[in-house]
Length: 183
Ligand SMILES: [Zn+2]
Image (cartoon, rainbow, N blue to C red; front, side, top):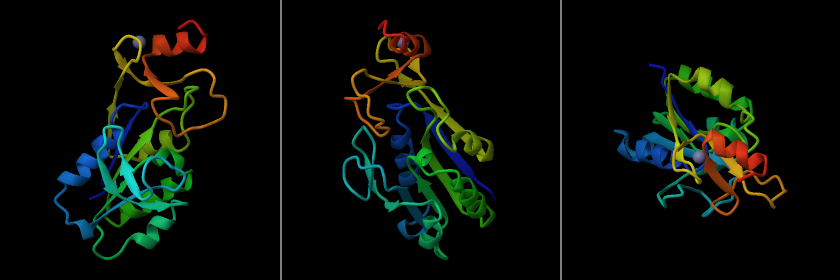
């Protein structure tokens, strides 16, 4: 059966925590499942998928989505992908191919960048997914459900992987206010 679950949302929504939970509660043995993340995510330890909440799991770091093929073997039944928004358009093809081979895919990705532009392959991945799970964060200003990532002023370098110091989750109202410099 073709199965691709996509967990998506803004920053601080708990996407990675959810991904790790799915990994930990799956029925597969550790040699039947594989976790990968893009090489450019330099947060925390190399080779581990970390959530902001402190959970982690061992992951292969890959430079290109095609590298997943070299990691798959006969016993692979499930693949978990973190930060899938960074993997580029080729990841859509790779996932399609893996699904054809009856490998279950679970991935977590950031919907939009801090300018609220769709992040890379995310719209196409949502169409390809057999199940999508949107997770919302809490707005940093009002505490209501947040779906936007706000980048605090004064960090003009295009750092896309960040942490509490650079970004905040915000509801639409407070994201817009922030972009206009009002809040
Ligand atoms: Zn708000």
